[in-house]
Length: 212
Ligand SMILES: O=C([C@H](O)CO)[C@H](O)[C@H](O)COP(=O)(O)O
Image 1 (cartoon, rainbow, N blue to C red):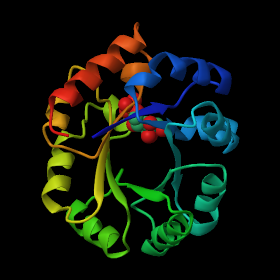
Image 2: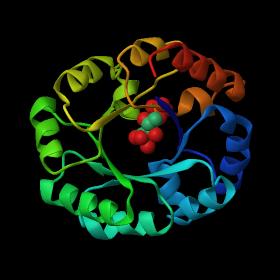
Image 3: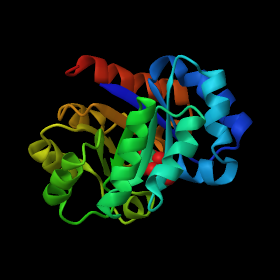
Image 4: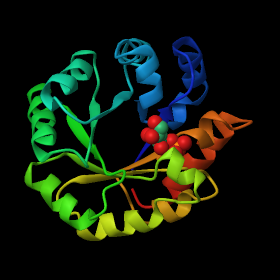
C-alpha cells in the first residue's frame, strides 16, 4: 500500500519545501487540482526534478479531450493522471491509451458517480489502471466521508487497482487501511497539521502495521 500526499493549496516553492519535511513517509506526490490550476503542468516538471525517486500524480480531473490533456501531464513527467468517472467513456479510453503509450497509469476519480458498481465495470472494460473513491472537499464540509464507497469499491472491483481520498487522517486511517486499498490519499490532514511530519509518520505507522 502506498501513501499519496495531496498538495492542493500552496504555491510551488512552498510546496517543494513542505514536501521535503515529509518525503520519507510518502510514496506518491499529488499535484492537486487547485495547485495545477494555479501553476500548470510546470509544477509536475519541477516536482519530478526535485523528487526523482517519488512518483508524481497530476490531478487534472480530465473531463474531455482525454488523450490530449493526459499527454500534457505525461510529457511533463507524471506517473499518474486523473480523469473523471462521470465523463464519457471515450474520454477515459483516450486517457488510458495515451498512458499506455508512456507506460504510465490513469486514475479514474469516482467523485459524484451515482452507480459505482456499473461505473467500475465500465472502467475495467476500458482497462483503466485505477479506480479512486473520492469524497470531495465540498462533500466533506457537508459531513460525508469515503468509507462506505470504499467498501462498495473493494466488493466490485476485479482488475483495477484502488485508491481512496476524502478527509482521511491518522484518526481515521485504520478503517481505510483495513480495506487494503493500493493507495491511501491524504491531503489536508498532513498539509494543515500543526506538525505535518508527525501526522505523516502516524499514518505511515498505521499502514505499516496493516496489510501490505
Ligand atoms: O482531490 C482533492 C480535492 O478535490 C481538492 O482538489 C484532494 O486532493 C483530495 O480530496 C485529498 O485531500 P483531503 O481530502 O484534504 O485529504
